[in-house]
View 1 (cartoon, rainbow, N blue to C red):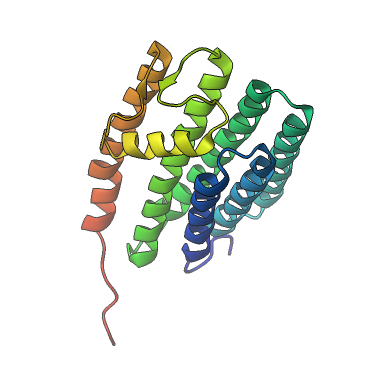
View 2 (cartoon, rainbow, N blue to C red):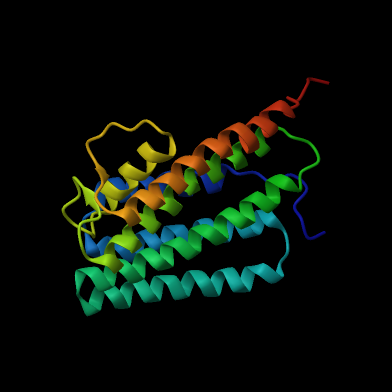
Length: 214
């Protein structure tokens, strides 16, 4: 069978949490960028393994290796904007692929249990990473003021913090959009976060059937 009978998202969630910790702890370190991309590549491999089709494994491995290589070369070449733009673009693509693989696994489950809920949670955490890398990539491309309160385009921890605050619509106000491009991405992220919660998560939880003891 292509699809595992009981996909478990524990390892994937652990990889995502580790990535969050790395971004928060060493978000301003250029040397840590390839390491963060490597962890995300591992998350993609885990998500593809859960999704089932073995033919995806080689493509996922090639994408992960390519993303790590691109980020390493960009950091070695120097130039904050160039390195940030390339590494954030690689991160964006990897997160997109990981979300697609995870969503496929969750959608294909006939029975909604704790693992399906964990998959939906993993996807929500990945959405914050997706928009974080998108914010950082656009900021690197534009070069001008993008977010008021973030003075460095390579500060991944600040962009992740802003992304989580926006996705959850908390809106502390310490970091705010400083350009029309930032406002456009913020609107898309806030809407995505709310629509995901009221549609996908609500549907998964409504169909959740906890395992009953025999």
